[in-house]
Length: 635
Image (cartoon, rainbow, N blue to C red; front, side):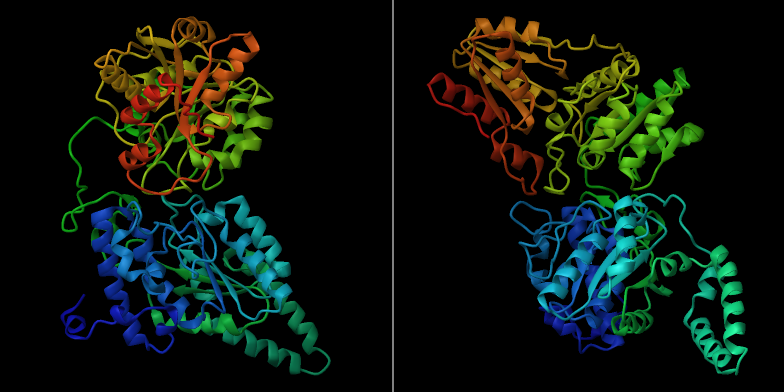
């Protein structure tokens, strides 16, 4: 913020709702933009969050709220990475310091948090479809107002966005789509369109000349309409090659833009025109990710989703510790690809998030970023697998949910050797319920032909990848967010499918852990041993197929069997053990510890594990409760 701005009375403290922006002039909005950037930077540097995208959308957000009048008009944010400014000016500035903390405000738009958040988001591509549904509901209910969907150019690669865009051209009388074009989603976009000539041709002076020319030709007696038709055909042929708005116009939208996304005067003019127009409108806005913070401008990918950091240096505030699971996976797949040229890596707009940026640098011809199109990515991998390749699809657990049908029909039904590497399996912490990967054990384990693993530490992750690469059919493994346990990583040796590991013997209680819960089980076992309770611990390793021989052997000899999982209990690991025991006629009882039948809010991983009682203390308490005759099954 400049010295002249600092000498002025701050505006942000006076903004309690969007209505307070309606009377502000451009100069005041520009000052407000500087104040907003300062607050966002200060809070995100302390709490972590999505910085670059929010900084890039400050002026756009202020212009939207200056022109469109919520709550009469509705504004929807795709994904929600860019909605921090929106939160600050919709009555949450006094709580903004609690962003992404337990009990604080969410990092994403959330309906129960504010009446100005009209749709919950967290996954991309939803805004246009939801906006169209809201617009039609308003029409049925006789309400006035426009519905604005703000979507990034990266999200436009989502099939859902294109489906919504298609129907919106027919039904969207109230619909305004704002395309926030920063030529990036999280990583640089696949197939992004940008050229100086297209920007020149779509500028407002050209549009005005076009209208004047059309009116002139129409006024020529007899031959005017013919000349106009010829001119339009010639224009369409030329525009189809160079004009980015052509696609949208063909779909039925009035196209405005591109508009400079950090010029408030131009934004307000364009959005005011869009608000007045009848029929669906698409406003194309060019913005810069990280705007106003030099380090984020220079490296927006590094500042997309970031933990606490030092504002002056941009260096994360982290203690040196074990490498993250993501980094271990990245190293392991690169080393495997050096040995086997059939390995191909695929991700959906998350090369850095999944660690595949390293693979891409070493094997650019064997790496594919399919954009925000998980369904396409899975079927694309299936096609590669039919020709003898070993595609590894690295996608966050929460995002793989979108490709369930393709996993079933295009991969598993054909028994193709596609490998699903699911990062962020389990709770993810501060990003909250839209990003927790807490359903994959349930939605994958029932699919025929699929082998499913959950490694307990970073060395086991390397072995799980080796196991998948050694198989001739589909396989999957999930691993958590964050750092590993600092164990020694050995040479990759495939596991025998369906084999667990007994890692502690005991006579009273059997703890069955899977993936991230194995170490808490061991810690609980040590504490219980000190109280005179003998505890055996098995690392199941495989959700499917289960090592029933090992599990049954120890369950028969122990008084209590307790399964522990970082997944919803419905249909999860514990359910698999109960089903196997019932089908085999085993008589031992199984108690389950896992996640409840509810969406889990945001907080640190340590806080969430403690609240949900799946940490070592919770496991210890559950064992003692069962031994005393209580029931701890949560469902």
